[in-house]
Every structure is written in C-alpha cells, then in structure tokens.
Image (cartoon, rainbow, N blue to C red; front, side):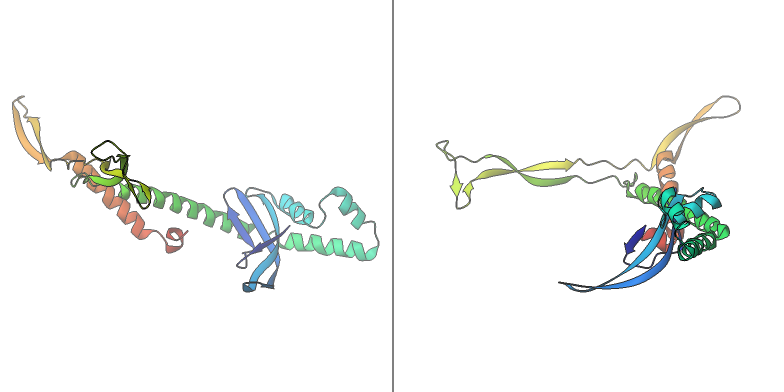
Length: 225
C-alpha cells in the first residue's frame, strides 16, 4: 500500500499495537494553486507488532500481490514475471530485520509509557493547590429583557436590550488550614494535643513535587507529541 506523508517515514514504525514497515521512499513535487507542494510517497505494510517473520514477509508480498491468485499468476507468466516475484520476496526478507523491529517496539513502548506518565503528571499539577484554595470566577451574561417604566421592551440600534447579570461560573474554594490539632497518647494512655502540619497539604505538596520532577525529566519529544 502506498502512503503519503510530509516527512520521510522510518523503515520501522510502531504505533499502538501495529508495526508499519516502509520502503521505496520517493520525494514528490506537486504544483498547486498555493505553490509547490513537496511530500513523500512510500510503500507500507501493516502487521501486528507481535507478528512473526513469516507473517511480515507475507504482508510485504501482499502489497504487490494482494491475492493468492495474483501471486500464482506472477509465477506462471514467464521468466521475467518470476524474476520480479523473486526480487519482491528477496526485498521482503531483507526488510525482516527482527532485531531492528524489536528495538523499535521497545522504543515505542517506552515512549507510550513516558507519554502516559507525563499526561498524568500534567493533570495532577492542573489541580488547585490545597494550601491556596481558588478564587471565585464570574462573568457577565445576558439576563432578562430590559423594560422601561411602563413595562415596555427597550430597544437600541441593535434591537431588544437585555439586562446583564453577573454569574458565578466557579465558586471560591477556601484554602485548607496549614495546621491541625492531633491527639496523641503516651505509653500510659494519657492523651495530649499537639499542632501538626495539615496532612492533606503535606500529601498535596509531595504529589505536586513528584509530578513536577517527572515533567522535568520527560524527554522533549514526548512533551511535544
């Protein structure tokens, strides 16, 4: 199958649970109304990332001989057609670099894990800071139709006039108290009260610190995906 892209695709490309194998790349120039367009065309075979070597070979062969009948015809149409078929099979075998395919699968797996962890960390930091709370957010919205003293609708050059009302779209959330009272008991069972840092704030700050550290260590190509 021929595919087009803005950039030359790598020979092996794992996306999700699929392995894409590319070959025969050609840079194509096309004149359009907006100017010269440059892109790449390549042959592509698509298989499960867990595909065996034989499955990959057959998938590559199927891009030229999509049915058993087409392949049988190629083997029955004379020496030139047989040689062309053999050249295609040799190409398919040469593209089955299982070590390179394994390396690409491992790279893609690492990328997906890093991307997932990065997205979780970003989402965690987007939550409000418990020790700071959240301020109220309001906006002006169109309310009821405005009327004059006689109860008649009011018009301007744009038509009917409406009252504008302030609406709360996000209520304020008060910050948590920085400390709390905690009751502790000594070995004799005597209770005393002590002031300690609010455990919810302590947990929030630790999680935010961990999320920021993960974001800082995430490779740039993952962040820009």
